[in-house]
Image 1 (tube, rainbow, N blue to C red):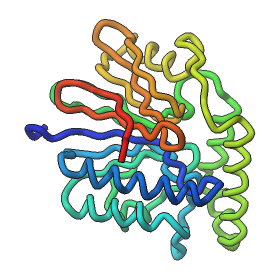
Image 2: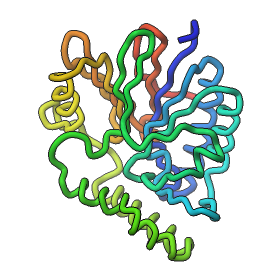
Image 3: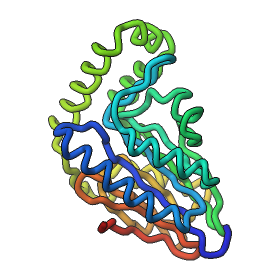
Length: 249
């Protein structure tokens, strides 16, 4: 990695989450953060659920989020790679974001090596054993046939339905998350199981809305980058160390 350049990770902005005025303020704050980190970024990794609901049509652009999308275009046009991981709220990203904004879209976790360190990076939803009800729901959401049928419905109806579903899902289980302990955190268990067969220096996830830095063994760490609803947090790799930070404008 180029000297003094850094890798940034952020997740769970949930643009469009009710109340909408707070969502707009988060969008402005996140754009301000992007303006700051682009100065020394070698790459930016957005780990999913940047939108609270997102569905792409061939001819229709979802309303809103223009500040965020415009800033992403500016950053990719400058030559800084932006990687976008689909989450459980924005699983329906097809080709609009990649073709229009230049982001590199990932629908599955990826393995990257930075400065000799091996990273396992993803949103985090559905990994590991268990959580079969969600995995069934995700299989339904990713069905090409059902996506085709959904796309035939007028966007005014589908977007309203999707936003209502997402809002109910988020508020029914509570906006904030609570750490369950290492033995009950699904992603921590997944990381430990993964280490039995392959070495990774860092596991980096979003999804849980928590700031977590857990030592898995003598050389491996689990990092959860938090969210932009309560924590306004991110992780940064500076070539030698991985740190969790909170953004203050």
